[in-house]
Length: 335
Image 1 (cartoon, rainbow, N blue to C red):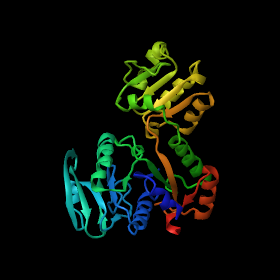
Image 2: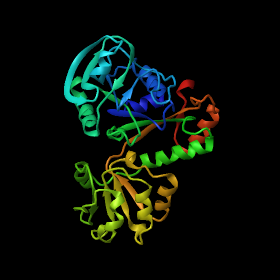
Image 3: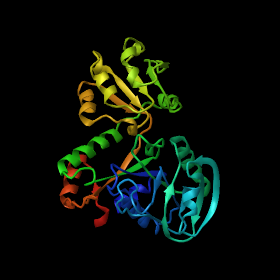
Image 4: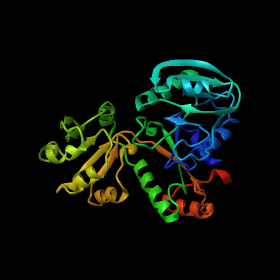
């Protein structure tokens, strides 16, 4: 199947839901069930907590993550000790999370697990890189799109996006909202030399001059931009914002006289929290947006059922989504 074959071309992959209950865990379970019979070594971890049988926010039933004999999984001590699976410990890291140290283990049986993985992007990147010592072919990250999460799923080479009725019960609206996120995922990456410089910057707002040199604007937040607007563009029209970007920033940039020549650079697409209308109005003015780290969209999965009980037509949703996105879309329940 092309979907799974495409996944196997990556060394790391995140599976991300656009909203709770959009089918992310079902998509993940489908992928794992197909990979278990292939001659590949798979590792699995999570951003935040996942694998619980009930959603702790909505109190609805959610599928647990099932892993298979031979797969490697990484979880915090608290959830590792609650496992129902037989496993051997490969490593206990000195990285502490709110749920204890991270435990790397190999499954010796097949069962369901609860996962709680790396607390930040730096740790997640290190963990993925470290899987080579166990001859892992593919590391899968159960991801999250949230301003509450300090770890970004965009650090993986590839991404599978899960969307569905829980995000919107109206097919045209669901397609529009999904296409917006995919437009962000597909934002171009900055040139390699600049990427190397910006990778190390964790906070603040920087100007980048035409020679590629960085200039700290001493502006700690986008909310302080208005006060500093006289000097923001004194080094050129390229700005890098290390943290989250919201409507305020895009509105501010759109209103500038030089809006058509402004280039905004963010860490990755998960840092953009602007609404589609505000984001696109900046783009229509001629502004451009780039990312330091780009991930390749490997597939889009749909869940036509919402936790409230309403059900969209899977075929109708799939056709509308494929038409808008110009890429294959999958309902894993029908594969």
